[in-house]
Image (cartoon, rainbow, N blue to C red; front, side, top):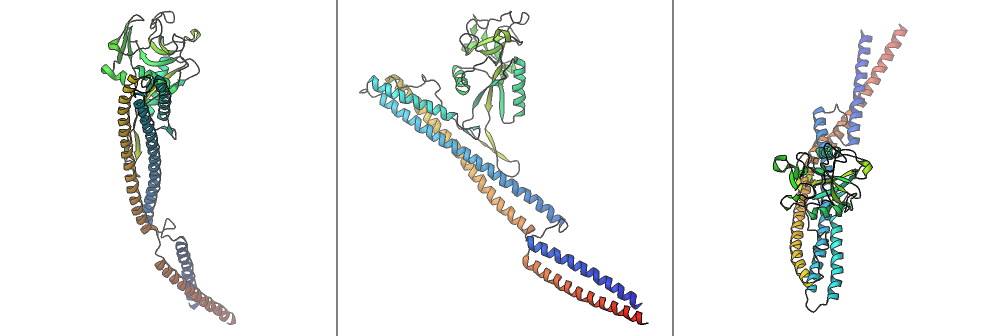
Amino acid sequence: MIAADTLSFARSVAKELDYAHIKRSEHVKHISAGKKIVNSGDDVGALSVQMKQSGDLRRMQEVKHTLQNAKSYLQARDSALAMVHTIYDRMGTLATMAMDVTKTDQDREKYETEFQELRTAALEISREKFNGINLFRDKAYTLINKNGPINWTDSKAEVDALSASDPNNTHYLATITSELEQAEIAFQIGDVGINAWLGGNDTDTEGDWRWTEGPEGEANNGNGTPFWRGNFNGNSVQGKFQNWGNNEPNNSPWFDPVNGEDYLQISQGSSPAGSWNDLPNIGTFSTGLQPTGYVRETDQSSLQQQSNEFSSSFEIANGLFQKFIFSSMVGVGTMSEASKALETLDTALEGIVDARAMTGASLSRIDHEISELDSSYVQKEKSLGRIEDLDVARAATQLAKAEIKLQSSAKVFAHANELFNKRNYVEELL
């Protein structure tokens, strides 16, 4: 009976010793990490909150990074607008100087040279980008060269698919509704250089040419915007812009005897190059007129900037300035031209001030969002700290208790082991 009790006691003490070892190790791990939760079993509820709040903090850091990027983008735009303001201000000064009755034509010629160089410099600024994003987002034109034959319907399908997949912009086959827009296309993509499809046709009624894509295509209950009636001897609809080549459109049956030519392209094969031509929606590659691409027009929406770790966002409004693409739009070669240019530039300068005000408002909003995010981040960090951070004094006390218990258990176990050995010795004597 005494032997059984001694063995049972020794086993019990051994278990206590093992448990004391485990608790001591846990306390050492917590103190070393400085955290309450080291293993998932420490506190499941606290662990869940900790993981969620840690994820929120990481997202907040990333949102702050995007806000800072947006701020840099807007600062770059503001700097560009400030430079354009300086350029237009100088152009206005040149216009004023050109109106001086004591100046000669040779003087005005020099002013005109500088004036047009400044105009070109402002145009180049309008094309500036920040990390691939246009500083001045309005309409964008892109020449899509497929380097091989493509018909109109496939071109439209490609653009429509892109538009459907892009939540921020609207894409469509280009619709050219003014001489200025035609010049803008040439400014953005240069000489087209290939035969390329545009967003017009007369498929519903022969000779009733309409823009059927983009906002113009949505007009008249989705029936498109008419711009030309008849063949090459027809008429513009209500003075709408057109740029047909010589003897175009002609609905020539040579390419498609059944359907004729119902789709619009900007052509390098017609005279003059870059004018419009009608073609069928079938292969005409052997003629040298088959389009090998298309002109894509993009309506760039305002940028959407995330403001917190959730899905909230706000709009960064676009800031534009008046461009003078043609040298004939403004000039100071004569006193009358200088007078008109000065009036036009005054309006342009007011527009730049408005654009900078819009940019400044967006910058103020971003600064506010960063400040709010920083405040929220600090509060969430404190909350997470209360969950994670270890009470060192308490942990040290618990470790000391574990050490005492471990030492006590070790001594008791040693004593039990000694008693057990004595029992064995007595049994051997008997």
